[in-house]
Picture 1 (tube, rainbow, N blue to C red):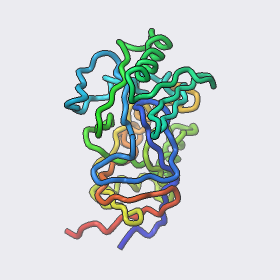
Picture 2: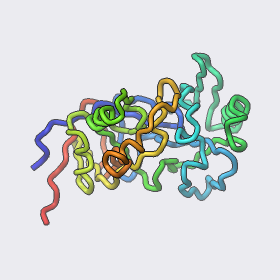
Picture 3: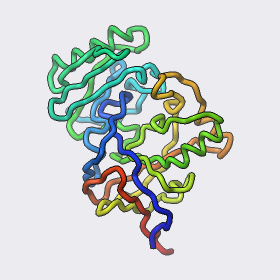
Amino acid sequence: MTDTSPAKIADIYRYPVKGLTPEQLPRAELKPGQTLLADRRYAIENGPSGFDPAEPKWLAKPHFLMLMRDEWLAGLRTHYDDASQVLTIRRNGEVAAQGNLATAEGRGTIENFFATAFAGQIKGPPKLLESPGHSFSDVARKVVSIINLASVRAIEDIVGAPVHPLRFRANLYVEGWPAWHEFDLLDRTLSIGDVRLKVVKRIVRCAAVNVDPDTAQRDLAIPPALQRRFGHGDCGIYADVITGGTIAAGDTIAAEQAALL
């Protein structure tokens, strides 16, 4: 028996560089135990962190440029090309920097842009980090993040203002679940065609969601509003990919039957 309410993937996004622009995908290939392709593949170190690409270990996000602290990042528009490995950064509609992240020269171009354009807003020398197979996620495990769009609309009612769904920087945005239904799916298996995802954790929101992704203004206080209403600051869920395959926007997503006790 599956949930009877129809639910579909409304949108798919990845975030090639931690803290920078979301990139919308029409479809995505999911592999067991992995994130979406190139999701949080890179991060920009905000002063020395001790990260070793040869022995990558998870580090908390304050080591990197990130929206929780650096809301000005949302004023940039970036695009990463998988084939060329070129990152393009636009500022005020103009190309401000472009570099091949596979080369020291290209990474240096990107690093120099942040070092000069935002010298007074960073803690130390910016360094573009990568390690094959590593994801600079907010959590140590490789997961897919999911946001229920009905819950976003419920938050709009709580804060009394429009809330852009991309404030939550999820991979999958789901339409068709009742508000907060995602919390009932903890430890459940989600099916998207032949793909299977195991819901493993609720997402505790930080101050990054207070930043409008269009204006780069810190104009809301969503986690405190959730705390006042519900006694927690959670919105969204993390899921492990159990069975891989290709998913696409518009695909049906369903929760499989919970195990009987």
